[in-house]
Each structure stands twice: as structure tokens, then as C-alpha cells.
Amino acid sequence: MKNLIDVQNLSLKFKTDEGLITAVDNVSFSIAQGEILGLVGESGSGKSVTAKSIMRLNPGNAVYSNDTKVFLNLEGQDPIDIMQLKTAKEMKVARGGAISMIFQEPMASFAPAISIGDQMVEQLLIHTDYNAKQAKKYSIEMLDRVGISDADKRFSQFAFELSGGMRQRAMIAMALSTKPKLLIADEPTTALDVTIQLQVIDLMKDLVKEFGMAILFITHDLGVIAQTADKVAVMYLGKLIEKGEVRDVLRNPSHPYTQGLIDALPRLDNLDAPLKAIKGDIPSPLERPNGCIFHTRCPKDMVTACRNIVPDFTALNPKHEAACHLINKEATS
Figure 1 (cartoon, rainbow, N blue to C red):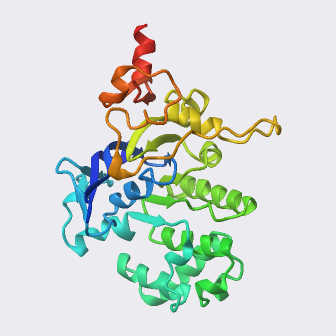
Figure 2 (figure 1 turned 30 degrees about the vertical axis):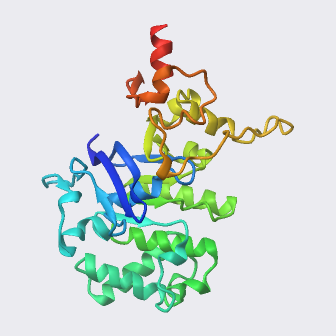
Figure 3 (figure 1 turned 45 degrees about the vertical axis):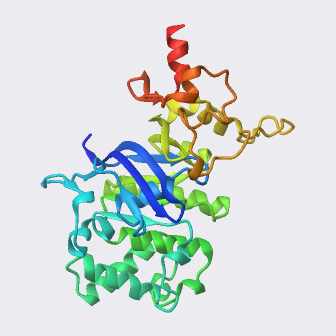
């Protein structure tokens, strides 16, 4: 299966009054056409910054490393390195064209004083060859397609007039109306109740089948990932520490951090079991630990390398790898 997006050596620092702060450190992954990749980790792990880097949406104080590459591979075209795009016209392919993004909070995506329909029409006029009449017709069709009743009426309403679940669906409709090849979904179900969560997840899976889209699905909810993703990448303090097929990673987690995330999930088969939290807090980016970035919270018996040397990825099988010195120790003991 052809990779639609290839992220290579993504490293990003922010210029601040305290100096350069590392937000993402040497992150690499790919997403194939029609594939869903789940990106998981605690708040502050760098998930959203990573996603915004694909569309170059991070603020002006962001500084990327020289070897950062983000290749977009479209049918019949040479690979496009998004990091090399300069003008707003060039960036259209990565911002609302071949790539669209939906956010955790829909109100951040809709202008409050402009109707939902006018916003949908505007982006179609920018990114397609539709005229205004065609854009309106297609926008109403997309609102109906995502399960919004009375779509022609909702088209003329404002975001604040819709319920949370309906706003989320309208945002998905707007993101999909340009028929993107890659949909970036940043915590799209966190603010929704569980029944609406399920509807949104089923909708996204249906759209992957229908349009052959790829999805980068960002969340801290491993339960959602288990039901949604084909592959999963686990992120901690700006670094990927484990990645692979979703069933491999969730059934056989190999990095202590991934194990901690799974152990922290409530158990429905034992309601009296105490909740297990990962000890400590995620460090400040200003105080990144040396060696393995997780060693300050790791519950395992560590080796000297954990505190001094950044671990490389070790293959556990052809589709599952983790970056942990203890894996190498176990393999050689």
C-alpha cells in the first residue's frame, strides 16, 4: 500500500523568552492511503504540535530542524515536501486541499458571526472549481451525509445555534467537503458524550472506506484507538517511544510508558480494582531529562544507559517496535 504521507525526522523548537524549547524531537512515521494512524499520549506530549506541523500551522516562533521532511504523495505527481512550500498559493494543497483538519472544540473552527453554510461555501470556492450555487448544493449534501437532519436549514444557522454533537458533525462535513486525501482529527471525540462519540467514530470509519482517505487520529483515549485505528504511535514529551499495528501494541505493550497507559484504564471486569496512575508528572520541556526521556517516571529496574543514552527503536516483530534500553537488555540476557 502506497504511503500518502511520510514524516521524516520532524524536530521542532519554539523560540521563547527562556530560549529554545524542544516540542518535537526526531519524530518519523508514515500513513498509507485508506489507513488510520492513532497518535496517543498524555497532554503535553506534542501530539497536536506534530499534527499542525504537517499543515505548517504552528505559530511563527516555531523553528524546524534542517533535516525535517514531510512528503505528501499524491497520485500522478512527484512527492511534495510540505516543509519547502513558501507561498500561500503553494500551501493550499496542504491547508484545506489534500489535507484537512478537525479540532477538539468546533467553536474554534467556526467564525461566530458567519453562518456555517457561508463558511463551507467560501472554502469550496477557494479549493475547488465550484461556483457559488454548486458549492451551496454540495455543502448541504455533505451536512446531510454526516447525519445532520434538516441540512438545508442548518446550512443557514450559526455554530452557537447547534448542539455540541451537531457542531462536531458540521466541522467534519466542512473538513470533508474538499475531499481531502488526509484528515487530521485532533481529539475529535473528547468533548462528546459516549453515544455521540460512537456515532462520530463510525462515521469516520465509513468515510475512510467511501473516500479512501487516510486519517491521523490524535487522542489520549486508548479505548477509542482500539476501536478506530489500524496502527498506533505512542508519544511522550515530544518523542515517539512505541509504534506498530494497533493490536500488537495494545496486546503486547513493550515500553514501560505504554504499559502504564494501558494499566491506567479502568477495568470493567473488576470494579473494585484500584486505578493505577503513572507516577509523577510529565516534565517541563524546559527540563527535558537526559537519556531516555521517560526514565524519571519509569517503574522498571533501569540500566545505566537509561539515564545517559537516548534509546533507538528495537523491532519486536516486523510491524512493532519500541525505543527502550530494557528491551535490548532482555534480548541479550
